[in-house]
Image (tube, rainbow, N blue to C red; front, side, top):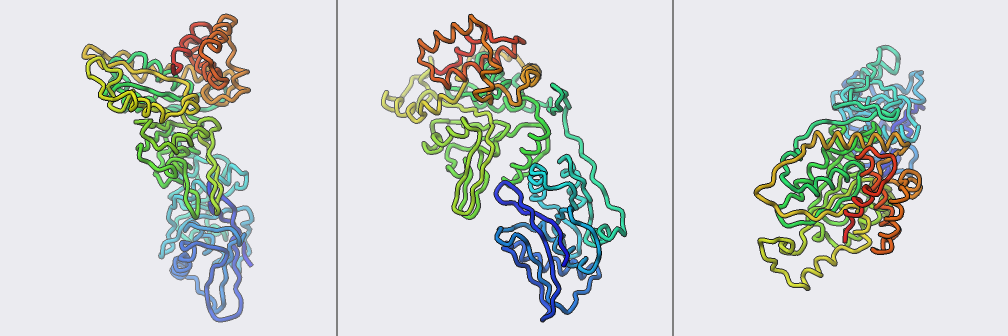
Length: 501
């Protein structure tokens, strides 16, 4: 009996699958057991055709392929190659104990690339379960981005059999270069793109909002912009993505993994994700869900990047209240009868809203048509616990025909990278906006004068413990942008000025 290793996705994590085959006396038949999905059951015809095309003759025996563990639901056409090899090599003495095999077979035996191979191999690598893998040659360039795995690339079933028999030299994978610029910061390698398809140079006026956007980007802080329609809220939000801090290779790979799980085509670029669901989006689409198996949602797809809510108060109340846990704990757990999946949600939350239903409450030109009751109802859709998790609040200025551009994205991005470098050189593993309680205590050190002002602010404004922590984190980012080692009075005052009143 011959064994080979493959794997299947169980939620977010990959689980190894032992593929084994037996040839027994009986009526000639070919069956696959072990809770295989329809795509695996259909692989019988693909495997048969590929083997016959390659010159393999089926013996007049009953062939049974087992996918172990048998109580794990398995899916995906990437197991075709493993099933074909255990049959073709049944009587051969080959050593493949630690080799994972992936690939979908065409009817002519050609190997095809599948979207599921990358997230499976990345998960196996993170669990320390894989060191060697045989994959389609077409997948080598992308898969070689995952470090620590030796790849064997094959074009068809015949070549795979020859490589296993050591009758042919395998094609080994070389790591593909990451696009963009490579930066060495605090002994770590980061990647970034200095490419600005949407530039802050196109934003006229709104100096306070642009300063808030710079601080938010430098520390990955949550940001809420309020202003009249057409003042530039969405325009600024879309440009923040291009000035965000550099990414580690692990972050690029995880973003790619999540994109593939969300049935999207990844770019493998060091550009942080951007997700902007419509306010009519359902709760499962935002947080993930499903009946038979849990699927990834927008909060997970935004991990490491930006989740943007335009028309913030118009989202469903259940969505707004459920957003509190991902913002605070940076994770979301999807529990279903058939599956429990936990996703990382370390994203930067950006929201935009009008000051009232008609949008003209803050306008000096257009009269507001809303009653006091309508304004109160509109404001009450956002609870204080939710708003308390947003560190930076900015009230947009009304547009003026005399406004002119003042800063471009290139200069803002350079400031963000410098501030981010200071954070990493201090020994932080995450930006200021994602520091936990211990990190705030360690890295957000206040001068005596700043400490006195913060105590007065707590007494005068009744700041909660979370609000104090948020002020410290924002002040730490302001200090980083100014190149200061300690949070001074001016840094703290600017951070307090961005508190929601």
